[in-house]
Image 1: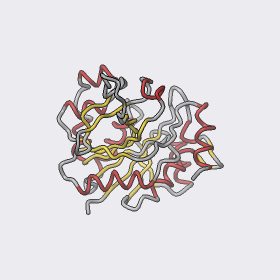
Image 2: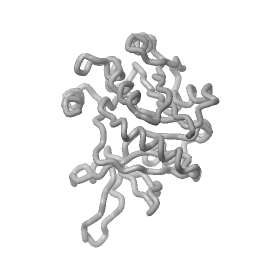
Image 3: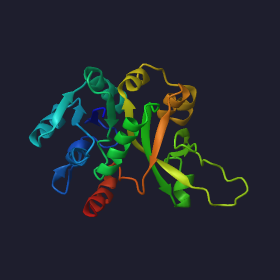
Image 4: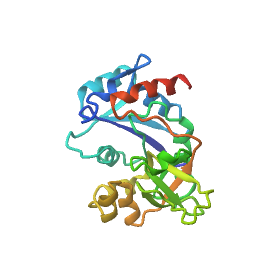
Amino acid sequence: MSKVTAIIPARWASTRFPGKPLVKLRGKPLVQHVWERAQRAKLVDRVIIATDDMRIAEAAFDFGAEVALTSPKHPTGTDRLAEVAKKLKSAPLILNVQGDEPDIAPSTIDRLAAALQDDPKLGMVTAANPISAAADIRNPNVVKVVTDLAGRALYFSRSVIPHDRDGHGGIKYLRHQGIYGYRRQVLLDFVKWKPTPLEKAEKLEQLRALEHGVSIGVIVVKRGSVGVDVPADLAKAVRALGRL
């Protein structure tokens, strides 16, 4: 089977939460929780923390992680990921594991890896979970995805998709999760492409891949992981870790 490398982008200078990767949750840095979850994935051969900050690098070295130092000029985590992937010529499959989701399920990581290994036609893969709350369905901060019958992404949007015109109900709404798997060459191509019209309209970079014809598989899991975007999210993350 093709080897799988999980890369965890981690930067210090978050505008909403500076120093976020090193904030302590249940006695450990946030990024350490993510790293430990990725380490538990059975199909992952290698886990790397990609950072531009020596404070994060030194903390990661202390808990035993492999670290790749990257440029501080990257506009997105995907660009940071690609810098590392460019040097990993023997790593055909790359997973982007978000560094601020401490309760990410190892089984989710494995399912993304397996999807890429099993279907060579997929250029990328991501995850989604069912949405039940009406407020989340209408919330533009909750990104929705619709798929074809084979489970491949048709579109991602901040709008309510699909639209239930006649109000019959029974529609299954899916919340997109920000974890991705890539074939290495697709990732390297992706960061060379300029932002596309739909991407710029929705402010969703995965639309760049769809607009370039990349086939994106979507695995559906029961629940999403808790993301830490601002300090107010910490209590929610601690509760999620307590349920593990």
